Length: 158
Length: 382
Image 1 (spheres, chains in turn green, red):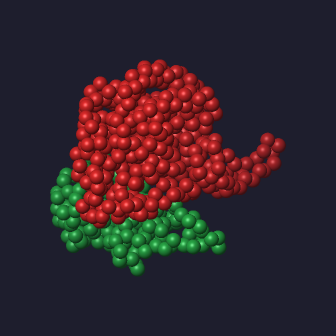
Image 2: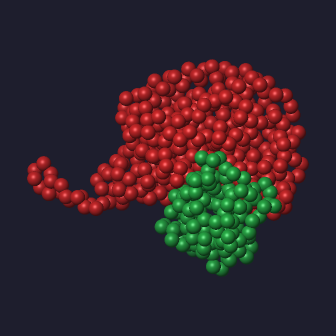
Image 3: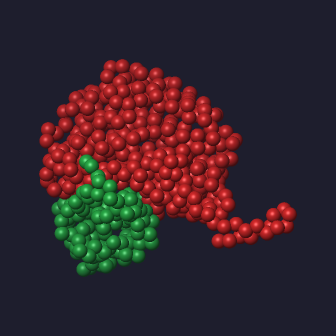
């Protein structure tokens, strides 16, 4: 199925939960969905026969200066098509529902997005830092991140 | 969990759970991976992986570059035993964003290099897997053959491990004159060596005892966990991006997708994942043979852009690396500096399944399972 067909299908099923369709973005267009319906939409994308998105390729955090975003690249092994979803949340209240129960591969990817951007994935079973040390302060991939001068009282020289 | 058993003298024996650390400095973790094990005697109840010891902020560094081309040496250092494949993935992602067409000769040389690199990487995987199990000789045999591939790379671009060879839109050097004859000699010799390897390790009785029926991964679990590459094919799923979503010029070559069949044990066990790698080396040789037969002429640098400044937009491109689906998500804001680069590394995703498949196994089997996942910590931690 093409991007337009999948978007049309989702619009009919979910209506206003599809916030925006970014058709003009090249080369990979995407849709923005409401965080509150993310789980429902993901489940539909995975289980609906004609869509069968069984594979979560990539889940990336994103800092859009003022708001944070999570990008989901999904694809189907059965139908050989792929699709891009995105949710956007304000930086001061970055809570996104976890989709770990739908695609297990999201587990570590979500931990990474939490580690790097501070996005809180509600009802994630094990939301800990993954790449940075457990006692690290701040979220390094945010655009306004200041590199700390000290780590555990030790001066860090660059 | 508490079990009470009796000794042979009739005394009761109480066992307790114990937490032990395997790694980060442990030979069978292939680098700096720490596995926190909860064990009951010799039986592993739970495995909690701790990663990040080799985290070098690849993504943060990329956002500071002044040019997309400067990212490529960093990409090399992600999967340091298969740098060519990492470079190719990044190059096709950037080319997708830039919408540039590249000369056919470049594509052919890229395929030759990546398939050679796949053989080299699988040789490391197989050799070190032998060591994990306790067989030392196959390791030396594998490294002998890998050396000849590295010599070919050195002849082409001067580097043996981290090449910076595949550029956005082209290559850093054309093939030297001696390359094709030396490669042909290598192919003839290596075919014999695969047979030798099979006799020595693959069908060795002790090796089969240690790997068959261990760490069984069912296909649906593998897909749900996002496993790819030999990990997924070992479970019997016929999925290879070179075949199912052909990139570069892979659609012009005839080759087979190797899958595990449960020949000596259960479908999806450690031995199946191992044998997929061995079989893939033969298929890579087939691809290389076809590519050198039909190698077109041309200039390898004619499409290299002088100034790389993509329009605002985003692209995700993926390619089959020796470990699985290596994807790059690049977001551009219209300047020469990438706004965001995310690497979807196959080893990272494949490793996340380890606690699922190793519950209930023995500690010694855990070494066999980690070895069969074939992780490279440089890529897991980026």
